Every structure is written in structure tokens, then in C-alpha cells.
Image 1: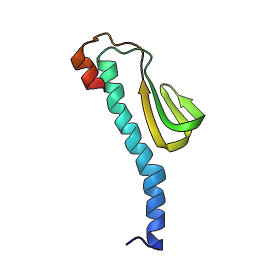
Image 2: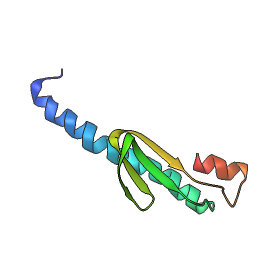
Image 3: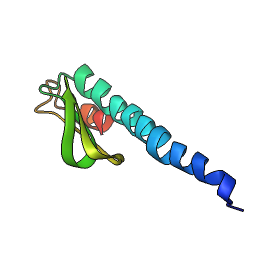
Length: 86
């Protein structure tokens, strides 16, 4: 059952662990996009207004909710390259 003593664990999981997992997940997309020659790679973690940008990482207001990786074109634009990236 879920009790009052579990509320701090919930907030820790929701506001710390979930964004870290989202960032690691998007890191996999970034790695394969970079490996396949993608240009202008950008990682967005969260939705809403932008809080800060650090290199290719962009963190938004609701940082715990969403992740997105975008890039221009792949140098190796083959079916296997798209499968690995996506």
C-alpha cells in the first residue's frame, strides 16, 4: 500500500530519477545519431518554457515529463542507420 512515509520516495523518483532516466534514454539516441554522422544534434528534456541551455542539452520548465532528440541529416542515410538512431 501507499502511505505517508512513501511520499518523499515518490517525489525523489518523480523529480530526480525520472529526468535522469529520460536523459540517459535520449543519450542513446544522441550516441547513434553522432555515430551515423548526424549534424546539429540537440537534446531537449522537459516541456514548457526553456530554463537553460548547456551545449546541446536544453532543459525546460517541466523537466520531468518529456525528452526529445533532434538532428539534421545523417551521413549514412540507410535503413539500418535509421533503425539504430530511432
